[in-house]
Length: 179
Image (cartoon, rainbow, N blue to C red; front, side, top):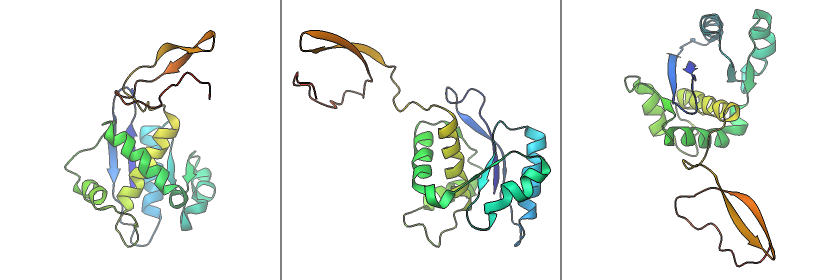
């Protein structure tokens, strides 16, 4: 599984799926390695990552470094829930555009459940990892509102603090006491 995202303007404009290859290596890793190598030369990415769980753990040093490709090995299995949340955040804010014609993407995302054992999830896992990398590299604001300064009275003095509008929800009642 290999993808390339166009992130020009992200997160102010959605990232776009620029290349997608659902690779059937028939038991070999070389089709994936060759595809990553080809896309590294063609797209000149600002960042590249791959699933370094299991057998692929040493690919960054044993394969890609020898080819001059700078790439991060990401541990999907140990960080999966963080990655799932990152994808939910990005998709929920409509910050990732993917064609509806690639049905495998939508089928795997719709069919993903916890626990995720015995599920076809190579596409979903790739998107989880991609979203996690995007979330780490770019600041994705959780609110759609800009921060505003409000004055808060504390005892006899005033101080300013950042306040984020949470769509009308009261986060904490201020009783006037300093906590």
